Image (tube, rainbow, N blue to C red; front, top):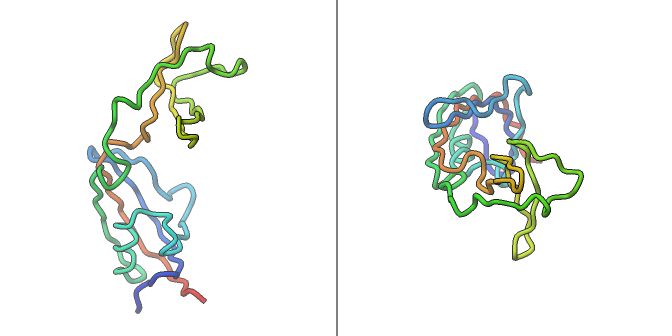
Length: 145
């Protein structure tokens, strides 16, 4: 059996856990996922491990928060005056809002608290500050044409 290489598509099953063991993603409901190696769609550490695996192999990859979604940054938690939100918006905790940064790039903010005059929103990725562990199973390798 051969290993996958850059450009190949691998079919995998996975489970992602935070440092405390909480599962934050898996393929149980969606079924196996196709990943093209080298296209940047997964963490480099996971891609590297997949390239070392053969069909049927099971491996675990640990990624520290600095190499995943980065540390939590408290300056990314902001208060937004309600009058700055679109009139049709009914903010609820957990809701995602799109905002434009000073440099013009888009950022997703997650509502964490709703007050009468303002909404507290968090611009950190929901998994910022979390070490992650990926349990991988390689099901198939489709060689690049």
